Image 1 (cartoon, rainbow, N blue to C red):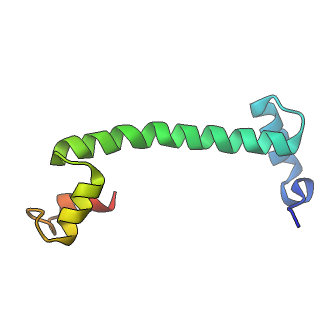
Image 2 (tube, rainbow, N blue to C red):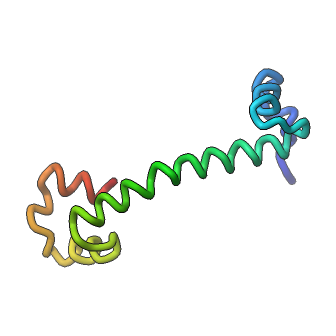
Length: 86
């Protein structure tokens, strides 16, 4: 039981997706748009991960373990806690 895209997406949104992707088939246009969106988001995320790993001198899994073991200095400071949740 799948979603009927033509019924689930407005005509104007369907046209926009088709125009943006250059794909005439709506199902393929949606897949392209979602993929492009994910790639764009990952391009934003990876540099931030690298920045935080450099800042703390460890990969996130190590940071998370240190966080849980209470060995992160100033764990509950705004900056450190914000970095953890980010």
